[in-house]
Image (cartoon, helix red, strand yellow):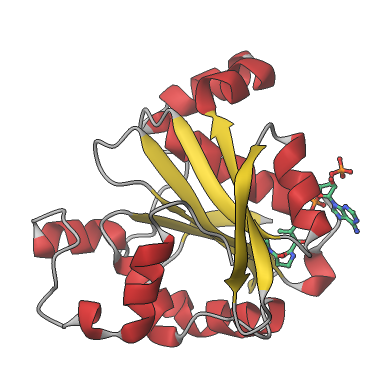
Amino acid sequence: MTTRRATLDDLGAIMALERASFPTDAWSDAMMREEILSPHGWYVVVEEAGHLVGYAGLRAVHGSRDADVQTIALAASARGRGRGRALLRTLLTEAARRRVREVFLEVRADNPVAQALYASEGFQELGRRPKYYQPDGVDAIVMRLDVAGWLAARGPDAVSAASAPAAVPAPTGTRTSEDRVNVGGSGSDAPTEDGFSDVAGVRERAAANEAGACT
Ligand SMILES: CC(C)(COP(=O)(O)OP(=O)(O)OC[C@H]1O[C@@H](n2cnc3c(N)ncnc32)[C@H](O)[C@@H]1OP(=O)(O)O)[C@@H](O)C(=O)NCCC(=O)NCCS
């Protein structure tokens, strides 16, 4: 199993997994593309035998003390063998590396597997957003993790991983969120030249980011 930074070249494979994992409320291609390229996004993928079998994303605005787990998903054939926990820990290590203090997320009330994973890593329920997930009308459970507490519970290896320069390096010669930082330069959510803030789904996504999100 290899974990590496996501690039735009992964978009097709990520979207195939996205639609299979979230059949009623999958993000659009445009939303996922902007997530991968966002200067505030940090997306990783998991590969096995050359096939993409998982992905996960963190939203961590530069300089902010909080971050959000945006999404995490594995191919059905790759679930239940610790890969989801490993992916989540990769995101949390990056959050710690960025000196984030609290990580938030939202999880469907009808998703006990994901809830169990988050709770076992130390996420605690903050509250519920009724009928948040549409069109299903399912509540969102908002959860929060204290990053210092998580690091302390994980021990010295986790602390040193969070002090390393880069938990998961980006592949060379590809487009990741760092390129967006270099090209855009503003580091803000202002509309960009390619007009991504005009995409309806992205506006919905931005609203979701106010309290954390995980489809
Ligand atoms: C949620 C998901 C990422 C978890 O990844 P995973 O690789 O299946 O989970 P892991 O094997 O790492 O298990 C982590 C924990 O999840 C829980 N879990 C995993 N499979 C479970 C199952 N079948 N039933 C109940 N709990 C389960 C357990 O708490 C487990 O910890 P344990 O092994 O110590 O008991 C994965 O199941 C998935 O992609 N689901 C579909 C997409 C999704 O729901 N994403 C979350 C959106 S918020």
